Amino acid sequence: MRASGILLPVFSLPGKYGVGCFSKEACGFIDKLQAAGQKYWQILPLGHAGGWYSPYQPLSCFAVDPLYIDLEDLKKKGLLKQSDLDELCSFVEVISETRVPHRQLIPEKMALLKKAFAVSSKADHIPGFQRFRRKNRDWLSDYALFVSLSEHFGSADWSKWPRSFKRREPAVLNQYMKEHKKEISFFEWLQFTAHEQWHSIRKYAHEHGIDIIGDIPIYAAYESADCWADPQLFKLTPSLRPEAVSGCPPDAFSEKGQVWGNPLYKWRYHKQTGYSWWISRLAHNFSLYDVIRLDHFRGFESFFSIPAKDETAENGRWMRGPGMAFFDAVSKALPDSRFIAEDLGFITPAVNKLIQQTGLPGMKVLQFAFDGNPDNPYLPENYTENCVAYSGTHDNDTTAGWYGSLDRKTRKKVTAYLRSCSGSQPKSSVKAPEFGVRAAVRSLVAAVMISPANTCIIPLQDYLLYDSGARINTPGTTGDNWCWRMRGDAFDEDTISYILSLTKGTGRFNSVRPVTRA
Image 1 (tube, rainbow, N blue to C red):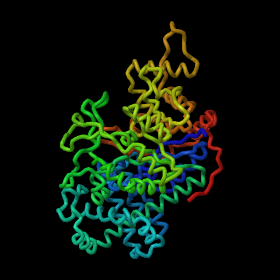
Image 2 (cartoon, helix red, strand yellow):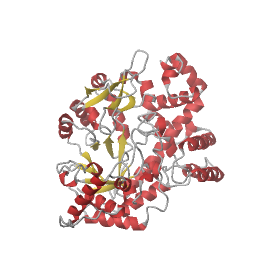
Image 3 (cartoon, rainbow, N blue to C red):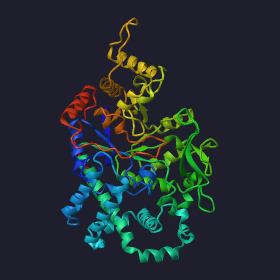
């Protein structure tokens, strides 16, 4: 069935408190998705962001970022006062309305969350809290202990902790947990609160006919509860440092390649356990999302291994991943699960074969289409039905920013393509005027929506015609990423009307009646 959706990270939602969260603004966004005839809301990973505030380097593969907790909900429960919220609101207004000020905001919001926890005073008796603890004990206690220790030692780099903590000596950890019971309980309560709030948002989405497309990074961070608590899952040295790390080889975009720095999986061990950790991870994420985008899908076929001591990827090499055995195990354990394969970048015949074997829809990104090759797989006329088409992703510039930065030769190719799509190609003797940015963005989005792809996802910035200032992430940089926010009045009635018209005109209108699901 043809359908469409909009990509917008939760942190990009509007609101008064510095970051988008599980709030009335999230419900308002869902209302607008329904009004615009959409079926999907695609978000980025909800994980507790670690280094450089990236959701793709989380402190846990299971935890939700407590930054998303809605403070107004805590006020309704009597855990915070209006004066607490007003103070944070005033603080945020001084800093920024359209960027998430992570460095300044996190300590301020955590202070309020600690205050709310203190007011609750008897967290063990909060309805549902003990049940949540029991249900999530496989990861929750290790995560809460890890975050507590990270604060205690001033770093999440557990290789720098005292040896007894690094190697998880039971007597030392038990003593620490006795001495810091309240603090550890606080981090568990944060997860209970975040999960409870998000489940309410997801239920609201379902009641309005909207499914959530989530996203999980293929790799875990070294500075994470997962790596510290279960080092046997990863290729580590006897001193518990990575043997090799993740990344990608040199290419046209990076002459020395990219070093991501994640520890690599010990896939042979995972296979021996029936991929139990992965299945638990996916099952947990399916309690948060309806569809999961598998980041860096090609890593399941083969992954790039870089010596841990190297600063560039030039000495890396490809190594065999788990392949179809992994997906067979997942399919058996989690039947009817819906995935999207993020198959972008350098894709070999072996990767294409694995995608075909799994039957998963891959991704097509229009910004990659204009190299002059009529067989380019990212040209809309070359899409198959079983794919998810995008004008751009969170790693791309906005379409307006991308188009505005094109060299003259490429812009001519885009102009010629758009004119051929519209049937307005001039005679060869007539010079074709270039499209203005607004017209080009609208035409490019329409080209994606018209395509044969069963599903199309458009970043909201492209509907709003925003330039590079609204870009989410620039790969390979650690600068001003993961912080763009939408103004509250940006997604207005005119924009909704335009999206609805385009959605109906391309046969993607969500006519399925909303249903209530768990």
